[in-house]
Amino acid sequence: MNYVANSEVPLFVQIATNIEENIFLGVYKDDTQIPSTTELSVGYKINPATVLKGMNLLVENSIIYKKRGIGMFVCEGAREIIREKRLKGFNQAFIVPLIAEAKKLSFSNQDIIKMINKELGK
Image: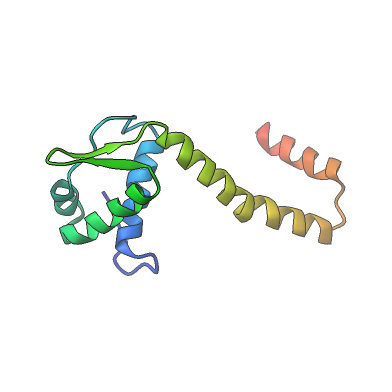
């Protein structure tokens, strides 16, 4: 478990992102328990309250849920929720700037498709 203490991204967001990544990759599957706040705080070597704050972000987004007295579990369909979130982020982070730059360079749609297909073929 890695985090960057001097990152501009708050630790609790980094923790939520790490858990989300593990869910997306299938490390934690629907309705399975994730590591406890204590386990994660020991692993990250940070305050349990920080871990809990990250987990609460995931609870708010219907990624995980709490079973009182037992722990946190992955929500049914969490991977799809994460996928949808990533698709939106992918579009904003990559497609929008790609199209903007392509327009500046006077690329046609076919030019862009050819370049993408060429990279996919590597």
